[in-house]
Length: 301
Image (tube, rainbow, N blue to C red):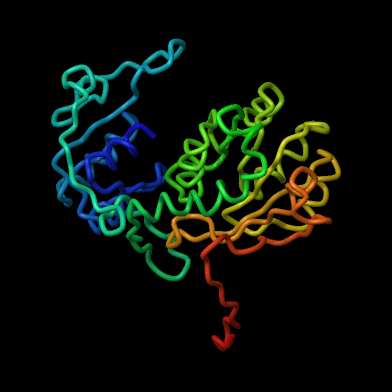
């Protein structure tokens, strides 16, 4: 999150890459993007160094940084040609150069698609794309709840931040001054523990999270649960709602659209009165979004 905002502030382009990538995928996305600087975990340095000579990379910055009082650093050896983020923060004054940015034209983000229709493709998103999508989605969806939520509530984000849904969620949360809980998306026990202990206003996950949470005895908790990134099986939603006692929300979006394009607002209807009944679907298009439904076999509308 620190790097994301710093990169945009400098007028550079952020290229989020999966920490799970093997060397070939890493080489492809770094090579295609033309990235010259990489910021990564210390544990990923070896993998980055294995492909560095085949790219345009000039700078390597690695973490972790001891931001939290109870966080202990692993033993870190000096790495030739690499800089610790902590050292850079201590060495340089926080006075970034003034950069003229045209929000509607200048790129802020270059995420790669999932490759479901071929090789992953870099998606060119501007500063305006990011800001607009946040306004279109969470600020529109949550407007009736602003007084009780904005600057007061919290959100649990169970999605990787390199994924477009996770990236959108961070910006959406910050725009509403929501406290964020960021967990390992694979640690379902920690996710369940966080829900029980902190009772966040909203939980954002993928269908697999909710399938696994069915066995975690969450009981009936007044929390808004939203699902994205994949189709939510109706049976899972129905069973989850039966156990938790709260309707589930769902949404749809694309990397190319900066995040959300559709949101199901019926899950909030008990509070907002938006709809009389809860309906299962990805929802309605967010404001200023045009949608056309076509037959994938014929391309006919």
